[in-house]
Length: 292
Image (tube, rainbow, N blue to C red):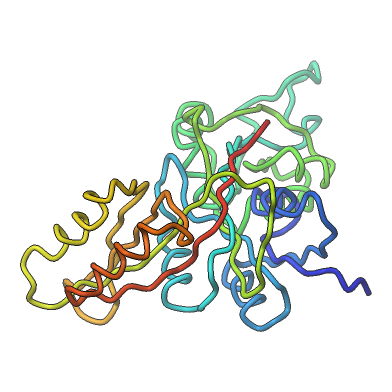
C-alpha cells in the first residue's frame, strides 16, 4: 500500500472529489471516498486520512449550515486551504431509455424521478419546476451517489443531477448541460486536517475566526467590527450561528482577507479579546480560485 498521504471526500465524481483532485494536483495522495459528510469529517478526526474536503458555501444557497456546525461543534480540525469552484450541474441519465421514437434527444415526460444531493437539487429548482414539473424528486448523500443509483436502476425512468465525471464513470449520458438556475454558481470547498498543507503557488490568504461576545455588553459587536475597520482589514463574510447552549446566544463566524502572519490581524484579535470576547482561530490558509 502506498505511503502517500490520504485525503477524504464524498464519492468519486462528486464536486468534493474534484476539489480534492485540485488541492493535490501536483503531488501523490491516496483518495478515500465516503458516502456521508459526517464520515468525511470523522475520517480525518480518527486518523484514517490526513485531510478532509468539505463543501462549505455556495453562491445560490449561502453557507451549508450543517457543515459549518460540524466544523465548529463536532470536530477540531484546522482549515488548511480553500478552493472556489464553478459548480456546473448537469442532467444525467440513459439517453436510449429517455429518448423519443426517433432515438434522438430526450423526452421530459419519460423522466419519472430525479435524484441528487439536496444542495444540488436546490441549485436547479427553476429548471426542475419548468422542465420536469411532474417528476418525483429524491435527495441522496452526494451527486455521485445519485448518478450511481440511476445507473443501477435502468428502465425506471430515472435521471440524476451531477457532474460529467460521474456520468462518464457510470456510463450514463449528459442529457442537458448547465441546468443550474444561475451561471455564477460557485461553491467554496475547505481542506481541513491536522497536517500542514503547503502550496508555494498561493498568492491570496484568508483567516477564519469564531467570536463569542461577552454577556450584557451593549455595543460589543460594533466594537468588534471597529477593531477591523480602523485597521482597514477587509472582511469577506460575517455570519451568526447559534451556540447551541442557550436560546438567543450566537457566535459570529468571520472570514478575513488577511493572513495571521500579518502585523495587523493579531493586534485586532488582541483588542477584541481585551473587551471580553472569546476568539477561536479556525485557520489561516491559502485561498485558490478556479483557473479554467
